[in-house]
Length: 310
Ligand code: UD2
Image 1: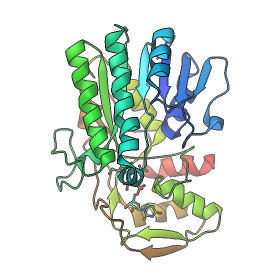
Image 2 (image 1 turned 90 degrees about the horizontal axis):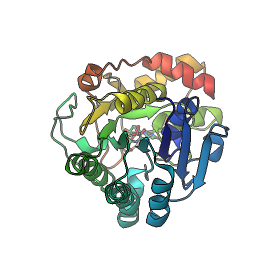
Image 3 (image 1 turned 30 degrees about the vertical axis):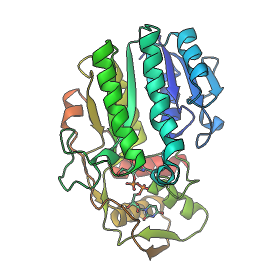
């Protein structure tokens, strides 16, 4: 993407700021982030980066921003990313994870804003505990938490608003994204950010369950490539795509790999599995590959690059 005006909601967060780092080279970037999990230090420093510390829930603010800036591309990445948080505060998080995003779509509709594309970031959470593996976009969905329900509903809003009102849109289902700038502040942050934090701070790392649960870990740089591809590829339209590497690895194995790469020991203890934890998660990414996506980071390469960044 070049010579474009781009909005990234949640742009000071983990994935958003990695995206801003890449797009800032050739574009004008507007970031809206309430800094609830994101950090201003995550953002690249540039005259072409315009930061607004604001919640996307403020409809008046968002409407005016959309009208003023006439964005070419819009990445909707702002969310309460902790599933547990959405279980504790379902209404409040629904305002952010769903209503605020519908407001953005509706502002585009009502004001007849012409955009090149809008991308909504959804999650593998929509598959819930359906046992079918690997998970395909056409697999049964089973959203079990307010987080997953809002993500799934928003995918449909993005896609069907797009079709109904002629707005170019696309949605992604992220699997377990890891890499630089993932905030380990919450116990529900990505597990690899918590593993690295425990190593750096000499703390014991708790494995919930037996450690044999599997995940499809995808390095954030591959995710950014996928996001750019989905934005510019005209075949990626009014549809949803898994973003992963199509490799299942157990938590125990990934921790072993982390130890090998870092040369540090992760001191482990075991505790009960988390309620509702998914046993096996593994994506089919053939749909994304058909657009030309190829993950560049094996788990080893990704962990090495991540460790280097710390
Ligand atoms: C990921 C997403 C979540 C949702 C879900 C959908 C992240 C951070 N979370 O949740 O938003 O999309 O997928 O399926 O990407 N674990 C430990 N010890 C810890 C922390 C975690 O053992 O201190 C375990 C945890 O119980 C789970 C695995 O590690 O079995 C991965 O945990 P996670 O929180 O990184 O991600 P996940 O897959 O639960």
